[in-house]
Length: 423
Image (cartoon, rainbow, N blue to C red; front, side, top):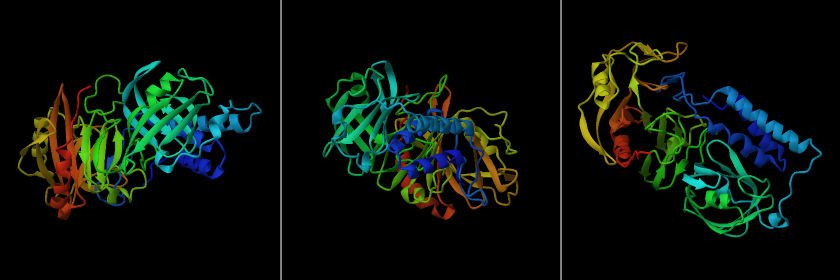
């Protein structure tokens, strides 16, 4: 089930096929705006019950994508149909070659002080020959970009923003980890202090199959940070790099990073994803502040229960459609937690899901997304309190009950590395 809006998909294909000299730049301009709005509110998480096809319906409102498409076409028209020439960078801008494939991604970094934008999110967006800085709200520092030899990068301003003048040329050195998941950039020279502050440092590659998300995609073994999930929401949401950190061995992928949900899955599972997989098998899911789901599977929470880890455990134990195993203590990062396993009660016949496509199952949690369990499924839940009323539910979801033990043995060591640093 695809969730990429038809307009966005058509625009993406048109840009790729057009081979216009500004296609990479337009693609960056348009799609860099999409993740600025937190994606949220799926319908049902179908749990391996056709015809729901095991996906969560991630996506932002269609209007946001349409607006992005309008922005893109407006830019195209202004460049292709206008007699006004674009500002020319310095003559040295064309000395280098196109950026290597390993650089043609967004790269996510921790928050930093950029002149004119203190304590801003830091996302470097590279195309084949373009660079832009995305601070979580707007793009700036638009520049041409070229490879000047192994590990050398040149950027030349094509607009005067953030203290950069048109034609300002910066030189940087970069190194990529063996699998390309991590990048370190060091400064050679740059007359634009804001760009230097934005670019220098350590970054994570975002290679997400979902074009509407900044998830990391396939990972090499190592430690990583989230960008959008916020386990400790307070006031208006904003991106907070490192709100979740974790360590994975080889063979894993980060497949979703939304304000209420972060997801890891095996790379073999991720390889079959078409860009919208939020409920794939063989996954680890971090749910922010889950509520007990309404027993009738309506889009609501159950009354009469609290929201602490202990309250959620009580809710699970009280549900006739669920059978839960014994509770075990565990340490997650530096926090105390507990876990238990869940199955659907034998003989349960009530249904959940989209009324047009119901499935036999029982609801578990609701946080804007629904989480349910169905026939033949077995899952592990780890519950922990973060303080200040914030709770996290970590869901380990194997392919089916027969693969439960093997997958849990893989997943639990990863879960135990999770940290949830306070702001």
